[in-house]
Image (cartoon, rainbow, N blue to C red):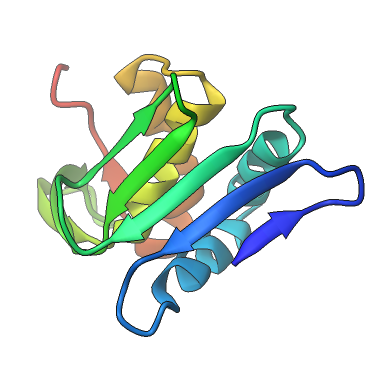
Length: 137
């Protein structure tokens, strides 16, 4: 699945999961929120080409600013976050949230972890109800 606008700007999506539909579902989730749609639009409007890989191995995720590549493992992960009732704890979240986080790094061209978590929360808190906290706080 690739996205290209009429002017040729693009994000290349590579889904290496069985069936190849998980990445499209995560992108649709991200695009369903106001901040998520804005995040994707800002990246789509850049002159750089970004490659987003979803696969079944490796760490939870990462952004390489030298190659503009985002890698995300298609597996749930644990994060320290507040739930809807304000209780802090470890919560299992989807690879979609990890993808939103790594897209935040791409938008900020690396950026601080705290700023990227702010983007991640703006995109995914309306979806999963969790507000992630930075471990360094």
